[in-house]
Amino acid sequence: MFVRKTFAVTQADYEMQAEVTIINEDAVVILTGGDVPHVGTVTATLKAALQVKLPELAEERRQADQESVDFGTLRFPSHSGRFHKDDVLAEAFLTALEPELLKNVVVVAGVHVDGITKDQIAASYKMAATLGEQAGSWLTKAQPDTRVPRYYE
Image (tube, rainbow, N blue to C red; front, side, top):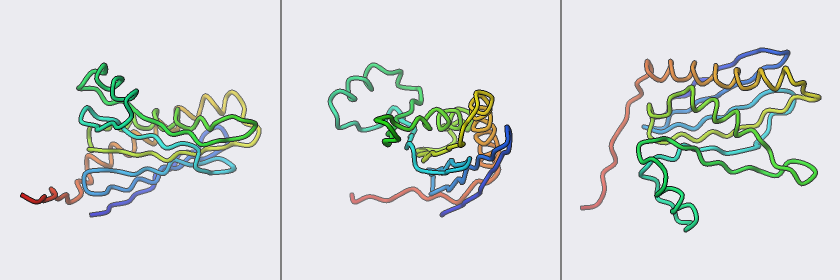
């Protein structure tokens, strides 16, 4: 029930990788790269059927278009009181992936390039999108075995 594939792209003097693991009808993606790969953010697709327990998020979900796919993110602390911003790469990846191909998708992202330039930052969005496109193309062909869970009656 697990199918795994790694994709990579090199541009602007660094590499970014996406390791995609399909778990039944869901996927976990590890999106890393640069000089110091790390866990910076966790971004997940939030479908209309999401059960939200926090009251402030529940209201936000009621107001959202029930057919759309949104993203929810957890940012980990970085340095000097800041938080990692790798979710922008995760969202570029997910948008290109077409998350409707799967039920739930979680992206753990962390890309750090020492002394990153503006050109390298601009390239990072394209790199993440390219990886999402590659993964989406693979997903349409991979067709892993899936199973519907049985519950107590």
